[in-house]
Image (cartoon, rainbow, N blue to C red; front, side, top):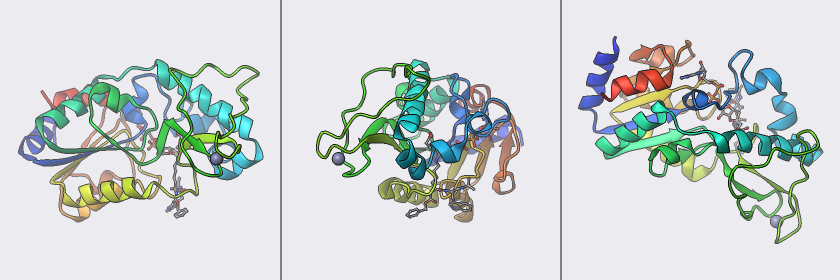
Length: 247
Ligand code: BJW
Ligand code: ZN
């Protein structure tokens, strides 16, 4: 199927779920996780940085790494892919954006209340009492002393503040996951953009839509394990393909 045939599916849809991963922000200059060479997990050890055990063992290493990530994200701007998604949302009121990303580029492009399945770099919280910590202002400063940065102490209980993201082995926010599953089960079109589809339970979202009979459009330059459930596989970068879908 071509982009035009995919665009026809979109024209007919009334309840759309747009499910995004790191690839949608790649052209904004934010590294993905699993792309060869440039992906974060090609250069850094996920077990040493993105697990609760890693934070417990070395809070400054983990906190500093996330502040470095926040610096990159804070300087990035939404690209034509984020803008096209906001355009879909404006044109089709029953659109729900579900993202695995911890940046805020969907919001900056005009998407209203995207569901963040894996949390946000802008929602730090206490690692012990879980109360929200004061969000840092503006882009983070590059941590001095390599990337290590001692986390601030919680103002309620004194425990270290942690990034408000979902690490491996942690449960996803229940409300977010339930809302995403419900939207996927109820939609009449799901568009999956820039995700490798290997991280669960998030990768269930497009599969739920397909199981409930909705067509699935995938936008990704590379094949993924989701290819087989997709009605249309559009192989290309999000910032080029998505604007063609919403012409
Ligand atoms: C472009 C592009 C362009 C490039 N345009 N596209 C079932 C089976 C096996 C394992 C599990 C399972 N169920 C659970 C697990 C364990 C684990 C898991 O899934 N592991 C697998 C990796 C093996 N899952 C978990 O641990 C989850 N928690 C959990 O299951 O809890 C259970 C529990 C229940 C109750 C109580 C307690 C526990 C949590 C997962 C958390 C994931 N966290 C991360 C880090 C977030 C914070 C941070 O930012 O550091 O989330 S990992 C990382 O992967 C991040 C992402 O959101 C996530 C998904 O990655 P994404 O977005 O797909 O990026 P990439 O890089 O993988 O792919 C990019 C794609 O873009 C590629 O396809 C490119 O081709 C494409 N692309 N340029 C369009 N221009
Ligand atoms: Zn606390």
